[in-house]
Length: 514
Image 1 (cartoon, rainbow, N blue to C red):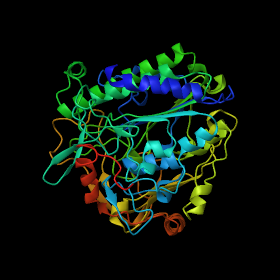
Image 2 (image 1 turned 90 degrees about the vertical axis):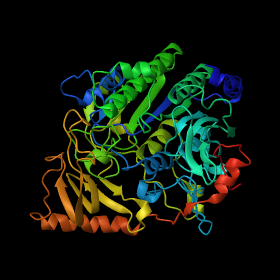
Image 3 (image 1 turned 180 degrees about the vertical axis):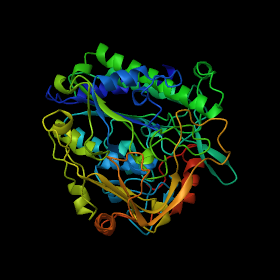
């Protein structure tokens, strides 16, 4: 707990000064797991296997509502931007480029969420919530306004880039210097904490400190975005040893990392129970994208098609469920197959907190409005139908050619462009018999590839040549979304970020455009 002692006193003071909130407002625990493959959790395995050891995730899902059609963007930053802003990725961010990019000629020329948009923590603070962020941010840090501190969080502890080293916390590099440390404690570099213990242990300890210092009479919003299971694939030796029967190194370490996180979540939920908070907690769990099946990624999305960096189902349909004592008894242990987009939790949380989800600040900045839909009537059993009928899928914003790569409407899905990761894995993947360069190809869908994802969830039968009318209907709808896509040019790496890192922050990344 040494890494978290400095925050305990401040958190306790903050809890004292927050106004009392209505007891019916639930505590909200949002968990966004990084690069978590569809087949890398026990409840998605029809036959139990000693490789996938996730008893806590399995238990929480069984006690909650499994979300069988929960959709995200195909990569990290756009999904996080979508969740926090309440917008579909095509209306906030599809660019997963360098975290230090900047375009001074555009007020929206930053990585992640534009400064003029309101994020969910700001909304929940209006309702009297205590708000805390732990782990990966990856939603912009060019200015203080874009960091968790400027986005309505009372505390934060984590890193800004797509990933850093689990032991040194280094990420990215500056010319003539090398790698820079990426670990930030709310409003300053976390000096003295980097290079001490396994990073996920630091995050787990910080989560525990937040909960221990919290006054249960005040509603809590805790956003925990673990580094696990993103690369680099690193895990404490005692966890890797538990899986030493797996001969493939990447698969062995990946499974060990997921098992480590499962233990963390078991401890967190036990603490919420001990504090008397669990019965009034809504826990939302989602992956940020499908698991990376390319060489070195370690994940497996079997039996789904493709994985991270693609808009096949394996890249955008992800592990997700809701749990916690706030869920009505009648829906616990059920599975729903209506569409949910990750941005929908914004309006859902606002509804539960009793605040208007509309974003007047964004309107004043002439930015896209929220797309979020209130999912509480659906997940709580008040209605059997999801309000979301369509899910547009964002392209890779780095290519600057188009913003929409796919669209789901009803039972059908269309894909547009060159779609990578065109392949399927087996139950045990990766393994030592896979070709060194991977097993996936690129499919040309510039004329549109069409699938019935309800009858063909593995996307094995392209219907574009036999259902031309449906293809045209879907492509016309996709073109409509393309016209409304938000695609500012966000620039490239800004050298000023290195000047701040090496000067002002003493070798740590931090906001540089104040």
